[in-house]
Each structure stands twice: as C-alpha cells, then as structure tokens.
Amino acid sequence: MSDYENEDECWSALEGFRVKFISVIDPARITPYLRQCKVLNPDDEEQVLSDPSLVIRKRKVGVLLDILQRTGHKGYVAFLESLELYYPQLYRKVTGKEPTRVFSMIIDASGESGLMQLLMSEVMKLQKKVQDLTALLGSKDDLIKELRVKDSLLRKHQERVQRLKEACEVGGRELQRCKDENYDLALRLARQSEERGAALMRNRDLQLEVDRLKHSLMKAEDDCSVERKHTLKLRRAMEQRPSQELLWELQQEKALLQARVRGLEASVQEGKPDRSSPYVQVLEEDWRQAQRGLQEQTAAIFSLRKDLRQAEALRARCTEEKEMFELQCLALRKDSKMYKERIETILQQMGEVAVERDQLYPGSTKRAYGHVNTAECARRAGLEDPAGSAGVILRELRPRGRLTEELPGALAPPGPRGGCPALRQRRPGHRGEP
Image 1 (tube, one colour):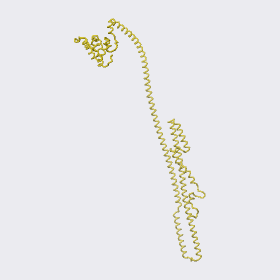
Image 2 (cartoon, one colour; image 1 turned 180 degrees about the vertical axis):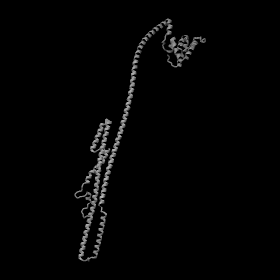
Image 3 (tube, rainbow, N blue to C red; image 1 turned 120 degrees about the horizontal axis):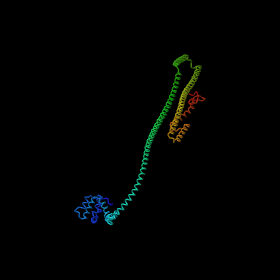
C-alpha cells in the first residue's frame, strides 16, 4: 500500500505525523486488527493495554508505534490499514489517498443496525457471486471435460507423432546406411577407375617399351646386315689378293728377266761397235725415239692406272654409300611404320579416354566430340599438335621423309658416260693428261 519499499524510509515518512497519531489514535481500537495482522503478539498487546506504567493514552500510542516500527515494513502496512479502517480522515491526511474501507464510518454514522444491513447486503452479493461462480465452475467443468477429451485426442496424436518420429528415425538411419553404402560404392568405383587408369598407363608404357625394343631390334638387324656386307667385302678382297705361290713365281720371273738384261748389257758392251759410224748413229737415234715413245707410253699407262685406281675407289665409295643409303631408307621405312603404329595406338587410347570421360561427365560430350574430331582430322592430315607425343613423332618423321625423297635421286643409275656424278667430276679431261 505504501510508495516506500525501504522500512527506514517508511517510518521516516510517518515520523512527521507522530504527534498527530499520539493525540488522535486510541490503542484499544486498533490493537485487535494489528494482532490479526500478526504484527503484535499477546505480550505486546498486554504491555500496551495493561501495563501499570502506561496510564496515559498518549504514552500507550507512543509505545505501540515503537513496537510497530520494530516490525519493519510489515508493521508499517498493517498500521496504515488500521488507519484506513478506523481513522479514514487521518489516513487521507497521511497518504493523500481516499480510503477504500468504510467500516468505521458506517459504525460511526449508522450504528450496529446499519452495519447489519450492510453485512446482509454484502452476504447477498457474495451469494450471488457464489452462484455466478458455481455457474462459471460448471462451465469450467464442461470446458475441463472438453479439454480432457481434447487432451486424450492430443495424447493419441502425440503417440502417433511419436510413432511417426520413430519411423522417421528408422527411415533416416536406413537412408544414412544407404548413403554410406553409396559412398562406399562410389569410393570403390573411383578406386577401380584409378586402378584401371594405372593399368592403362602401364599398358601404354609397356607398349612404348615394346616399340622401343622393336626399334632397337631393327637397328641391331641393320647393323648386323651392314657388318655382314663389310665382312663379305673383306672376304672377296682377301680372295682377290694374289697367293704366295703366284708372288714367288713372279719374283722368280723378275729375277730371270733381270739376269737376261744383265747378260744382254754385257754382250752389248763386249761387241760395242764404233759410235762414229752412220749405222750406229741411226740405231742410237731410233733407240732414243723408241725410248721417248716408251716413256710417253709409260706415262700414259701410269696416268690411266691412276685414273683407274681413282675410278675404282670412287666406285667402291659410291657402292658403299649406296648400300648405306639403302640401309638408312629401310630403317626409315621401318621407323615410319613403327611411328604410324604408335600414332594409331595413341589415337585409340585418346578415343578410349574420351569415351570414359563422356561416361563420367555427360555434360562434356560436345567438347569431347570436338576434341575427337580434331584428333581424327589431325590423324588424317598428319598435323597433330606438336606439344603431344604424336607431334614429336611427326616432327621426327618429316626430315627423314625428306631424306627418303632425296635418296632415289642420289641412288639413280649412272648416265650414258657411266660412273657416278662424283666420278665424272673427278675424271681428267683426256686420257693422256697425267
């Protein structure tokens, strides 16, 4: 009822009206109400009302206020309520509010008969309120019954919802299990795809190794054929060399010829005629002419033998170069065939990779089709991307192809004059030139 919550503030606010309280309030009138409010016990009431030392009423009111002040805020509220019931004017002066309880005014104004009528009217009002409350209680009972029915329905719905939740949880667990299985299957598929890719890579490496071994084998065969031809050439040269018996016979014939020459020279010196005779001079002139003719023929023979040796050397070298070029042409053809097979293998692997990519990523079909189209056009035109392995192979093949095209011209048969162009360039202008 008070605006003050702190008990010190409450009683400090009432301290200014203490004189008014002592002069107006009768302790015997408000102590029963204060005892009912349990702010006074019987001992306090007896002390206030029956203490011989408290004969004067004002001293009794002071002691009562001191006792109430010790009870704190509760005593403050009970004291104000007692003022509202028994001293409404004093209550109005202290609080500035109108009292809501008028029992003391009725008693003062009408006496006990008015109080009885007031109580009867209040009883009738209370009975009417009881009837209203009974009707309200009946309606509340009906509402309670309806709410109980609704509660039972709600419980059933809750049970159904609980069952649905349990079923949903079971379905969720089953869905999670299916998701886990799907994830495991996806992992297995990815692992198998990786293993397949690794197997394809190993297969490609093995294929490249097989191609390399084939290439090495072809090179070894070519080297072997070259060595075989050199061996045959050396064997023919050794067979064409003169034997030891022929050399011995030639040496004996040379010794006999030298002995005859010495004998002839000795016989000429023994029967030497007079050099001043015309016959001797004619013979010496014939001998000198014959000697000059012999020297010229000897020089011509030496020149022809030199040309013959040079021609034979050029012929042997041209024959060797021809054989070497034939072997290179054969090796180039084999390399071209091997690279062609390797290109076809690479293009086939690219097609397989494109098909696998289309299966894994269906959205990239158009791009994959364009890529395969480009690879097919490059395969047909022989213009694969230089950055790839096929481009490297083609770059290696182009100069070898040009060399293959140039080989037929270099290996063409000799012209009408005979011999190779190098031999014709090195041949002297006429037979008598040294």
